[in-house]
Every structure is written in structure tokens, then in C-alpha cells.
Amino acid sequence: MPLIPVSHSDDPRLEAYVSLREKDLTSGHVARFIIEGKVTLETALTRGRFALESVFLAEGRVEPLADLLAEVPEEIPVYVAPQTVMDAVAGFPMHRGVLACGLKGEITAPEAFLATQGAGPATLLLMSDLSNHDNVGACFRNAAAFGADAVLMDAQCCDPLYRKAIRVSSGSSLWLPYAHGGTGLDMVNAAKAAGYEVWAMTPRSEATPITQMDMPDRLAILLGAEGPGLTDELIAASMPVRIPMSDGFDSVNVATAGAIAMAHIFGAKA
Image (tube, one colour):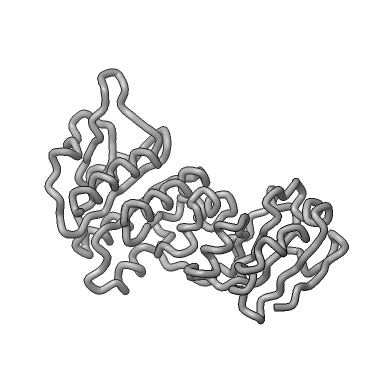
């Protein structure tokens, strides 16, 4: 596999990697996304469902990554630069020295996704209005760890292919099937129409403790934004379920709540 040396930070072939902290490539025409680090690059190459456009490495990373680089298809350019050049391109020190640019392609909305699934996956994670990239990435990681078959998100959720979300997800957003778009209510109604029982995770006292719930054959766990949580409309359209907690404390981080719920389901199905 040929390596392409780059000696100047203004090389137009590296445009996608310029000022990474200030830009989000995941929207618009021919949307792209940035992968950062060895683990996520390995995931993208060995099990990812998105095409790569290019790879960009610091010189010192080439030899240690020789085996991984052998997995890069020949048609994908691999640019190599001194660490100082890479740092200047990215706009901050790239300690990992490993970047890649992926092509997002078309991402379907939840309703269209479910319409193509036939009998469909057994367990779904649904997210509404999650705007924090760390939380979205962590929710993907938890979904992968506890056997969720797919993730559905409404349009208010941030993109799981944002650089930090991919990293926090440990690369799971690169391979775990997902859909993104529409309203939260449309997403819930589509899941119900497809035969899923939707559990709306909420700290409300009237919600049924998850430990008392019977496990349906097809289940969707619904999570809402950190702070405000799920809207009354979404809770009314679903089965409100809560995680029992000690007196005087009624909530945990949204990704933690999702992990607890999915671990409960995973254990019940084991």
C-alpha cells in the first residue's frame, strides 16, 4: 500500500482534517465524518459499515500500525506527515496521530428504517433530544455492550458520527445499525406499530419499577435529554418505567440509565 507524504499544512488534499475542533462535517451535501485513534480506525476497517475516503497519520505511527494499514483498501489514500504538520492541520496536538475521513452516505429516519426490517430486531434503544455528544456516544457503547440490535434517534439528537461521539462510543456507532430523523413521537409510534413495547425511562414516582416489568418479545428502551428528560407526550405514548433508587435521589446520567435498563434486559434474556 503506497503512503503519500505531506510536508505542508495547507495541502488541499487534507481539507477535511483542517481545524477539527471548529467544524462538523456530518451535515450537508456529501457529508463526511472524522475518525480519531487506532481503536476506531481498526473498527472502521474491520467491521464498519461506512466507506473511508482517506487516512491521515503522523510519521511516527506508520511502523506501529503496519498490520492495521495492511487492511486499508488500495484505492484509499493514506497521507503521512510529520507530527508538527498534523498538529497544524488539526488545530491542536494530535497525540494519537491517527485520523481518517469517512463518507456518511444516506441515513434513514426511524419510520423508514423500521419499515425495512421485516420481523425486525428484538431490542431497540430509542433516544429523543439528546444534544450532548458524550451522552450519545456513551449510549451507543452501552447499546452495543448489552446487545441492542439497533439505535433510533429523533432529529433533535446530535449526530453519532461526530468525532467525539465516535470516540466515546468506542467505535460502535460505526457498525451498530441506526436511524436518525423525524420527531420523537413519530419514532415512538413507528416502534409501537412495528410491534415493540416502548419503555419510557423516567424517574416519576408513578412509573413502574423496571424490576417488576415482564419482558416482552420485542422491546424498545426510550431515553430523553439530560435534565428535562422525556416530554409528557412521549411518556403518555409509552409505558413509563423507572429505575429504583435510594431515598432522596431520583436520577442518574442518561447513558447510565440506559446501561442499567439494557443490562437488566440482557440479563433477563441470558
